Structures are given as C-alpha cells and as structure tokens.
Image 1 (tube, rainbow, N blue to C red):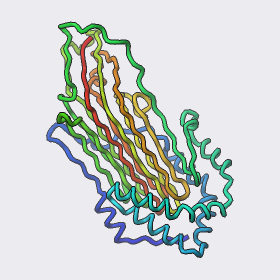
Image 2 (image 1 turned 30 degrees about the vertical axis):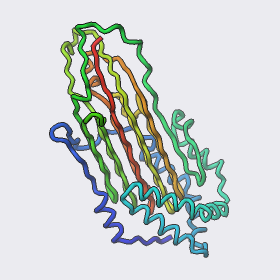
Image 3 (image 1 turned 180 degrees about the vertical axis):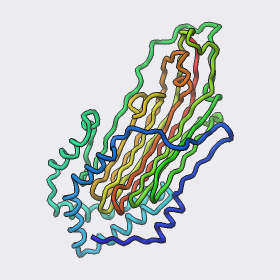
Image 4 (image 1 turned 90 degrees about the horizontal axis):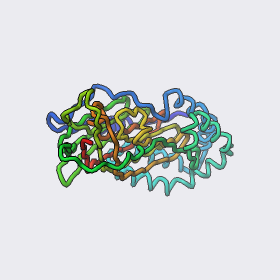
Length: 348
C-alpha cells in the first residue's frame, strides 16, 4: 500500500521536537551519550514482533484500503494530526477523540480480518524471557503492555542516634546529570532541577517520535556528599532515606505499523535494567490503533550503604523514557518524571 505524507508537516514536527534541555549553572552536566539500558524490547525482539504480526498487519491494511466508507482516510488524517502535535495534553485529548470516534471502524475491520488472536498472543509472548512474559497483558488488536522491577527490601530499624554521628540533607547538596539520544523525526526534552523548598528536586524527561524514529532521554539526581571516614578502614554504614514521587506516561499509536514506548525509574546506582529499586513499563501497538500506559509511584525508601560505597551514597534517582516508531506512519510519545521531596543520609 502506498502512503503519502505531508512534507511540510514533517518539517514542522522536526523543528518542534528537536532535543532541548534546561541546565542550572555548574550543578547540572550533560552526558555525551546515554549509558546502555536493558530494555524489554531489544532490536532483535523488535524485528521479531514486526515479522510475527505481518500477516495480520497485511490483512488489516488490505481491508482498510478496500473500505468504501471513507473512515480510513479520516482515521489516517486524525492519527497523523495527533502524531504531529507537540503539546502532550493537546495530543492526549486528540487521541481520546480518535478512540471514541474511530474505534467502531477499527473494530469492524478487525472482526472482518478474523485474526486468530490466541495463536498470535502466544507467539508474541514467546518472544520474551519468562520474567517479562508473565507480566504481559493484552488489550484489543494485539496491543499489549509489560513491566518489571522490584522495591528494595527495608533494612533493620535504625539504632538510637549517637551524638557523634553526622546527618546531611542530600537534597541541599544537589548535583544533576542528563542525556539524550536518538534519530530520525522526533526529539527529546529533559530538565533536571535542584530542590527549592517547598519544591522538590525534579527530573522531567520526555521523548516523541514518528516515521521510523527512535528517541530516548534520561535524567539523574545525585549529591556531592563526602562524609568523614569514607575510606576502606571505616566499616560503618550510612542510612539513606528518600521520599519521592514518580510518574511515567506514554502512548504508542499507529495507523498501520508498529510503535512502542518505555518509561522507567530506579533509586539503585547499579541497576541498568531498573529491576532493583525501580520499575520499567512498556506499551506496544504492533498493528493498529492506540495503546498507552500511565503509572505512578509515591514512596519513602530506606537503605543501608557501606561508607566506602560513595557511588551509591551519592545516587538519588533516575528517570528514563524511550519512544520508538518501528514502521512508517507509526507514532509514540512519553514522559517520565521524578520528584525527590526528601533525602537524608546519616551515619550509623
């Protein structure tokens, strides 16, 4: 099937969504490139998803193209308009209107395609490792979500404070880092800001893409704490207590194609896949229509850190977002935001 796309709209989208960031003097630094992250969907799995559902996608595309109602043209135009919309709230409103207006059309075409959904769901599940497979939840049109992560176990209660022990407000020793990556049409926005009581230290990361694009952004909140005794001979521990909020939202939507989004966070300095002290959530639209995620966490977390582990002592939280449009005329957009309200570190 031949598709046409408004080149001026693509140019506008490119200009609107090119990467941007806000920094705060010497307190926030930018990485040259994002560190490697273990996502639910690797490049190989992405190819397998696209190939697995290709017969379904071809049949649905054929039926939509043959439909004489005019709904396909209207549906395509509405989806492209939403994909070219920069403002997240405005785009969300447009997608809700599309869901309401065009669901009957997409459902009618889907029913005509007579998809063996049970078979395709199992095939898609089998592409993933067992720990991810068991979290997969399907919606209509083979759209699905998956998740991973775990909360850190609570340490033993703190002993009575000793007068000689030092406590610090880690939020007041703010240091931030951010990075972005990606290419094609789309972009990122990321902001890492210090606490300004009563406002918390914050990370706001977003990514948007279309037409075979792939964009990611990530921010980190650290501190510059350097307590006396952080040497190998000091065997005492530090108790880190954090109170934070996280919200991750994303939408993958496609006329005929494949798109997905991932949002994540962690408070663990050594978790490259957000499996410890955090969560990762992914939504996939592998054939058509709209699939979204909206997750929120509010938590107070305590952990014991050896004084010699300065990397963990200085690590607060990171927020990550990835938006991917695997095939033509697919779109995705997502945000991942963190707010560190309180962060105290005390010797024990």
